[in-house]
Image 1 (cartoon, rainbow, N blue to C red):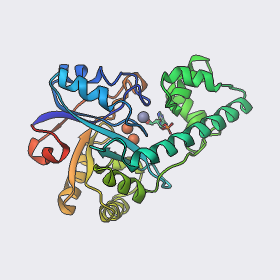
Image 2: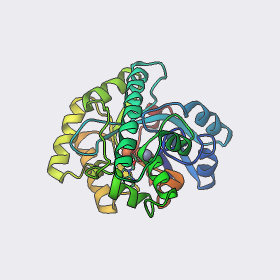
Image 3: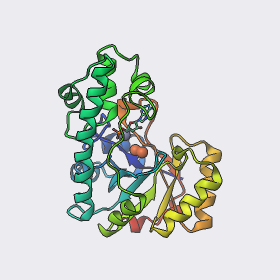
Image 4: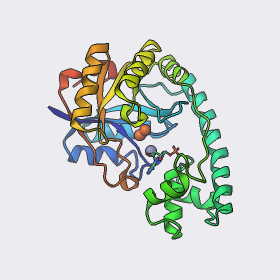
Length: 274
Ligand code: AMP
Ligand code: ZN
Ligand code: FE
Ligand code: FE
């Protein structure tokens, strides 16, 4: 077994560790391969790859996009080239975030727990402001006991300050990743909340759209679930991948690294020479 992590967030989205600091942490934990997969942005990739070389960890540039669906459906893109058609789509998605954040702030004010855009932005420290940043402001101002509480009472799906945002359809997400030279992988399949039969059908459908792999090993998946996903990949000739979804202090219970058998993943396709 080797330890890898193909699902990492940095300060360029809603993680708390800088792209240049992730490889140092990974190296210390004995990781062989790492991929940066920030939400809706590839901004950190260059800096991340440079730092990977410095710390002698194999690095893969990536991104995570949320697809339009009645449940949580995230698609990871690996090896996407910057300047491809995906970049344009991501810019459109990020614009939608901005719009959404304004609406979330208005709703929070109306609920008597005001958070300003400035507060959210300064919490993020980058252009990409997400709900975890707003959650941190709510905690800091004493309106929520911790980020989880902030999501449950205000920001999560179904909560009173929830606002949906612009998303790509699953087909467009996969297409744009592929048109940009990348490989599309379904992230944390169990977070869809679908039962196994429906999940199987969804994976088959996404495979017909050009899906390359499925994230079988993830910090939120049990051993049994991971093995079942792994089996599904074998049946459908999809590549089983793994990553923690590390967010630093924004998800302090998630630590980096998942163990995989090196032969499971065609590393060369990911641009990695193991
Ligand atoms: P956004 O991209 O702004 O929609 O925010 C998505 C981020 O919020 C992801 O990192 C999620 O893991 C996190 N998130 C979503 N729901 C919850 C929740 N109930 N508790 C904590 N974090 C959450
Ligand atoms: Zn996140
Ligand atoms: Fe995700
Ligand atoms: Fe993620």
